[in-house]
Image 1 (tube, rainbow, N blue to C red):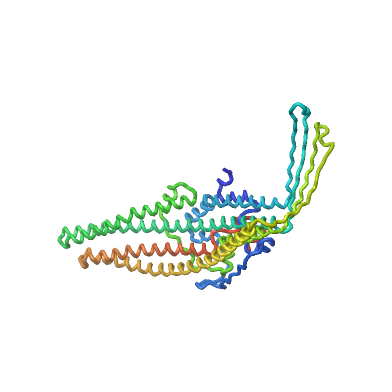
Image 2 (cartoon, helix red, strand yellow):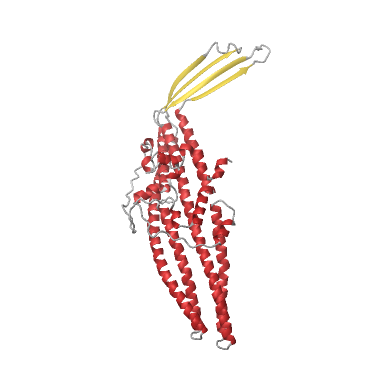
Length: 481
């Protein structure tokens, strides 16, 4: 295995890919040759603003997880960017695309070859002398009709698509790590609530037993208290299992064996609170940031270039070939007589039973599919922003409501415990108050987790989670506008 790739997929891509680091082209920075590709009309009317509340503004979402002010979450994200094995595979695919581009560019240059040998005849009348020969051959295709040029454009589009796919994978993995950490925080908080509630229910059960011994209540109170306590106790192993599963998933994302992440999450921490406001960039700006949209466009350009490659088969093919050589019976006189030839040829396809036409139709169909995929990526990006913007607003409202509900439920539970102990209310009223408190606490935790998750999904939808600054060539050439 290449030693560099063990140091992290992003570092591997930067070191190995050179100028061909991912994200070489943006929508506004495509090369002239790509812009001239014959492709279907792909105009899409974009909305000027979002329907959800927000102010169009230039917002840096590349490192959005840092705004959550959770050092452990930030640590997990950075480890995933450096070590995630899916990113390593994607970086390798970018390297393959770079090699394919280099291979296609070689078509512009002459192809040279050389050969040499020694021959000796055998038989009754054969010469006993060795015959030496050396020769060189050259061929060059004149790219009059763009077959080679369009092949290079197609390979370049594949490279750009692979680079943006790497960036988009980083965007998704960063979001997955953040969402998984928030989920683990939520589960840990619910686990703490369950254990705290279990301790309170132990006290209530003991109070019910004392009142039963004193003849103040029937055994029904004790049995109801036992039921409530057993149900709470049963929820704890399930929460512990969920926490372990989430921690193990994070371990895989950061390319570490299970264990350390779970131990760190068990130490406890608050659910991160997102910023109070998220400025929404204009839709066109968001699409410029979204690497999945850029990858889809690059694939469209590559598919369109392959249509032109297929069409070039119907046009004449011009080639120049030449050879030079010498033969002799002695090494010393090998180059005394040198012969050679130069040939210019042209060929034209006349009939192939419709094979070339079928290839053109296939390339056009593929381009139409790529066009549909690009349009779908655009619509999907717009949908993500709108949907998660509404989800974030709803989660914030829920947090406010559940915070009030928890405060009221806590006050009611305190009053119910004291009144039951004093014999002023029955046990059913106490159980109702305790159940409402448990439900309110869990609902508040869930709403807080949903608020943080909605923030992650929204900033992820806005194109957050990667930055052209991660790739020095982009910044140095000013292409990441």
